[in-house]
Length: 298
Image (cartoon, rainbow, N blue to C red; front, side):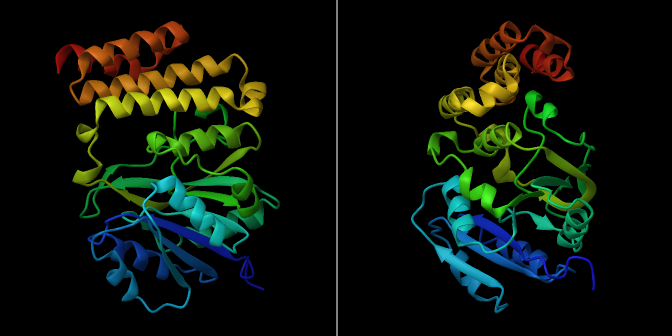
């Protein structure tokens, strides 16, 4: 028997007004060398012609659901509720799987019986497919590294379905953009998060993903909420203990960087000071120096 041919995988794509990108995304799933999967597309209230684009695909493995807009966390949770696979993986509607993405995941599951969660690598590419930032290998497991920020993505993550039914994405709209990291920390407090050292996907960096477009007020609320939810989870508190301050410090450092890039320097300095006061060792992380440079020189 071919390795893993009986294992059914669910791919969940949340989408909102991505008609210009989603056809390539869907095609990258259909073109997988491993074929035992379902593709669940959850349209989070698109107002463009996303539905027409999806309807042009006739592959029986595709299911399409349109719901009232409630942000990406709610769309992913809805997709999970409709999924039948033993494992679920996610794909944003402007990103791409390489042809062996699922095949490599099946191989990894086969070689690691009973594995709960793992992540595969991806390159960041421009809209023409040229690599901008190649994938940097992560430690295995990645749990401790997550104390320093979000090194994972929904792109590349594979999680057992029963786990995602218990540990859902937080659907608070104000958390959107950091809801994945909040979930990874909760999962890291409960399971090893393994890393499969292969690059099997591409995150497409296009103009609408620009950090220059952030609303500073909403962004600050988002980071504050992330720290709040993470610190309130009992299992997280038990697992990470004093390292919760480290997690908060790196969230503040992340905030300082994006505020600096978007030219909100007073708030950037505030979050940089908060980062240092919570975890002074953050001073020796290269990102701290990058933030200082951007706040002073840009």
